[in-house]
Amino acid sequence: MSIEVTSGAVVYQQKDGHPAYLLLQSATSDFWGFPKGHVEGEETLAEAALREIREETQLEVTLDTKFKGYTEYDLPNGNRKQMTLFVSEVPTGVAVTRQKVEISANGWFDYATARERLSYDNLKTLLDQANDYIEKKLS
Image 1 (cartoon, rainbow, N blue to C red):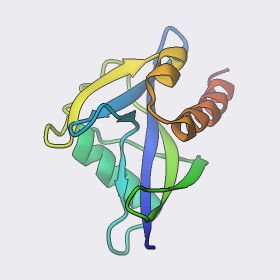
Image 2 (image 1 turned 30 degrees about the vertical axis):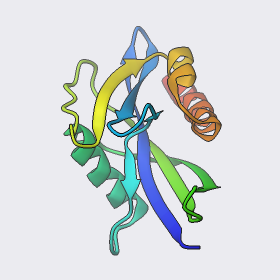
Image 3 (image 1 turned 135 degrees about the vertical axis):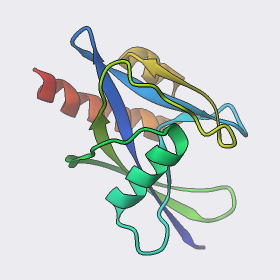
């Protein structure tokens, strides 16, 4: 068994005083999740997150590394995936240009809708943690 290390962020913008979350849909399945991907070479988790967000959305973001959500799980191929997510606020109305090879759709969703749209429970838990952190920051 090998370990796959991934990193990304819960990207959000403020809409009417509340966060709206950016979710991406995989081009190869109905999976909805956050911008993220594999750590390459000697990259740090933060460097990998910034690169993956840029590749998948064309957004240049700043990470808030005070929040670091983490989960790990087994993959069908027998490998174990370790995922770390930071948070990143972007300006309202920023344009997302999706990487069409990997991403079939994207959208900004309020917390309840984003939670419902996410494909896996561990991602919902990470959204819960990020939303708590962000709401405290915004208040």
